[in-house]
Image 1 (cartoon, helix red, strand yellow):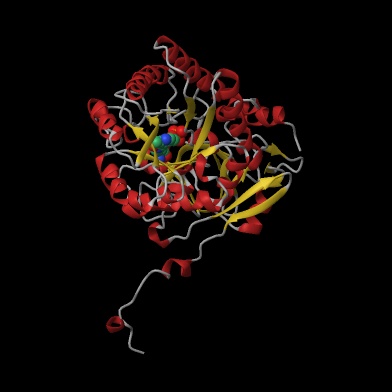
Image 2 (image 1 turned 60 degrees about the vertical axis):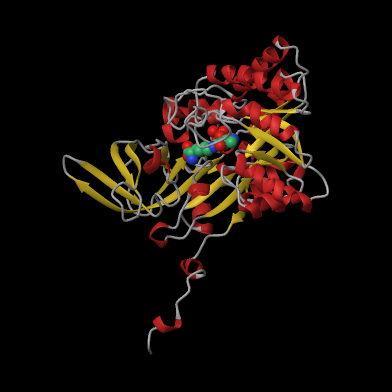
Length: 463
Ligand code: LLP
């Protein structure tokens, strides 16, 4: 293995942030990414080319050390900067699987789920129900029954949640533990699709309604309101909106307690951004937690409030950098004077972020990372859609079919937002650690995609 300084030298400033062990969200590659003396790229002690031949491509590779590193960074920073109790909750929409639920649970974190699927994955993965919060702006009766029935805290997002829970309540032996989500009215700079804190949002109670809801809940014997929640958006690099949020939430806390609610938890949501390309410059996990913790502390002291338990809900900054995707390059199309397309064996079905948000990524050849990057290419996916482009204007060594491309920072919102567009099966996922790879998600097969199709007998082909 070549040490990470040489790794950085080989790829220039682009990967230099990878030397920051304490702030994994600021790295471009997983903490364990190394160039072997054979010139191959390895993650978690596993050569990516070997993984590709054993498990096929496209392949999601998840580095256990990086994931544990971010979990510990959140926990330690909370313990260091917040004098009261605290809990970091993994927003599992970023990447939901049994293995990730189990890993995150083993690191002592909690988990946020937004559907019966995410909830069951968390519970089956061993996440204790008392560390799970259940979100959603349109929860079904069945989802609410499942969550409340298992003792999970339900985040009440709207009147419909309260109406359904009130109807279900007689089935429960205990009052339902609730957290109340409201829109804090805070603007931040990120893609408009992933902003949630501004007033025009589908999530949470309008701040004008807060007092009315709190008074209503004070008269609901089936409900036990123990927390308040707000989330301002995702992939945010600014710290000020998080400071502002603390003040808004402390006002809400004061109001809720004055109305008799035993509020223990203040959940400030997630949103910390990560580095996808060298020019991205997010705050570190430590800086983010310090800012949030100090702001909550100051806001509570200013109002003479007993310190709540501080909850935060990171998704992307916990898992994104731990993940990479390995593709095999297939066809090559050169359009003289215009561009060269390299097509890979995946695309928008395993990573819909470029086509959805014009997201940028960093990539290199996994089997020849040290070769000089003398070409500029566009990496396209294999879907029947011109916009199915994963990377534009990528500097690469001359690459041909059979070369392996590794795309970094794909651990969040790739697998979880994936689709079967063009009936392309979902990739396998492996967890790597100390030179060992373990399959954590089997590769879907084309036949699997037919499992839920039903062909009415009158349409059966006549043989
Ligand atoms: N809590 C709540 C209530 C959320 O809605 C979210 C993200 C999080 C926590 C976690 O936020 P994070 O720490 O990951 O920023 N698909 C988009 C991101 C959507 C985020 C949705 N909510 C993307 O690919 O960029």
